[in-house]
Amino acid sequence: MTNEPSPEERASQLRALADEAATCVRCGLSEGRTNVVFGYGDPDADLMIVGEGPGQHEDEQGLPFVGRSGQLLDQLLGEIDLRREDNVYIGNVVKCRPPGNRDPRQDEIDTCKSYLREQLRLIDPKVVVTLGNFSSKLLLRTDDGITRLRGRAYEWWGRFLVPTFHPAAALRGSARVLEDMRSDFGLVADVVAGRLEIEEPATPSEAPPEPPPEPLPETIAVAKPTFDQLGLFR
Image 1 (cartoon, rainbow, N blue to C red):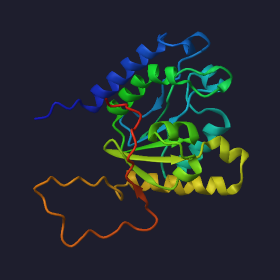
Image 2 (cartoon, rainbow, N blue to C red):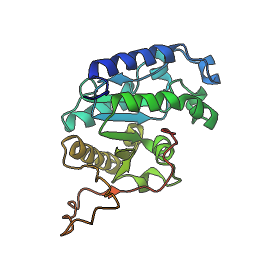
Image 3 (cartoon, rainbow, N blue to C red):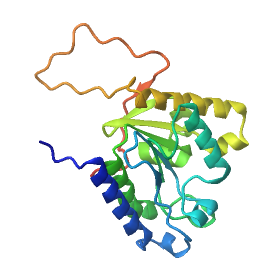
């Protein structure tokens, strides 16, 4: 027997968490918001996408990634046979729009990160995709920029994290940015399809496997980060 909640129970808990967030006044971001942008998608998703915070259009509609960036994100998901309504959940580091679309401050992140932690716990995705410099640096706790971080799947709290460019960068950048994003979403497809799995650590009494396992294909790069991963699960 297991005490793990069913998908229905987790969905119910996620709705209750969204209701709680809708009236949150824990930080100053609540003073200027139109809507809390909690998240949207499948509460039992294999893929969770994390952006930085809501922009103007998201604040007005109460939904993440609307407008041109959202359309491109939907296109990239469609290319790996996913939709935001089916096996995908989209959220942000902070749930209220920072004034002028500035980066969230550390105190705002610290105040809001319990919501992200609970979203991750309840949805329990196989893979998290971080969009852009801010959310990628934040969740991977590194100063490296997105150009250096992308192109790899990082083992992250019992799942994978794949950093990639923000869709807005592809809209205003070169065709190369879009092709790099397509490559990163190919990594996502490998995780969702079970072609890339977390290696279970050996216990002290276990000898290393003989012979050593075959290396992963060159197209799949896995990194084991040594940094403090946001402190989400402390």
